[in-house]
Image 1 (cartoon, rainbow, N blue to C red):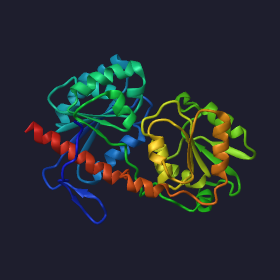
Image 2: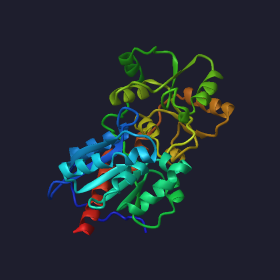
Image 3: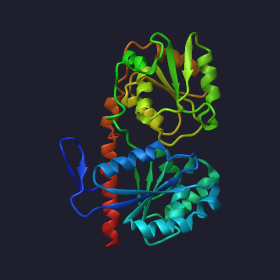
Image 4: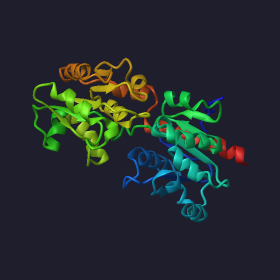
Length: 331
């Protein structure tokens, strides 16, 4: 049976911020840094936990493949001995597998998509699901693939709606130095990232006249929010995703969206006017982009983010409930 949150054990202020009532909670975040940085959705979540009084530290992994991850075991044990966490929260299946090579500190693992959708990695994620005290999935599709029957929950990564919020498009363009009249489409990543399928995006946009495709690369989190407000459409063409932050953040900015049916995108944007799901056909994708470019008004995606409890604070509450449940079991 999957986890059903019980009554929250944390106070909620008028600003919807949680403050821990009892003893200080120490969480060690275990995640990869193979790309040269920690994924923003992990640091954003960790910062939100810190904001409510949780003590957070990171153990970052550098090494490829199962053996590369497991080679970090001694360093992880040293970190655990020094930090003395009450819980470990690992992000991605291989990080969880490393964290579970010790059996003293309970491990919560969040699976973000590639660790479920890539068969050679999924094998190790399945092992980790058995070892973890609790498993978190960011999409319903990945829960079904996992075939787990207990100790799991569906919790997509949350959006910081204080950063990702609607701004006047002209004002955003002025701040970024963008042309005020140019039609702009924002691609969901780096053009060099093959998983994001940039060729399809480029081919679709090339069917249109006087439309520029921008890559999402080299921006700070605040700048990403500004760019999403400055462009006319946000575009995703990825081969695989879990619960893409790009889509949720674009929605929080009320930006029109065109996306292939990947991850949980269809569930997240369903029924939101100005947001479109398409297949991988260039012509259909191009047609949907053109419709989105000609919209008179922005979307009301932000309302859906709030309604579906995808704000960062709502996610933090769910995590705190899970952490508490695990610690109660341990006592």
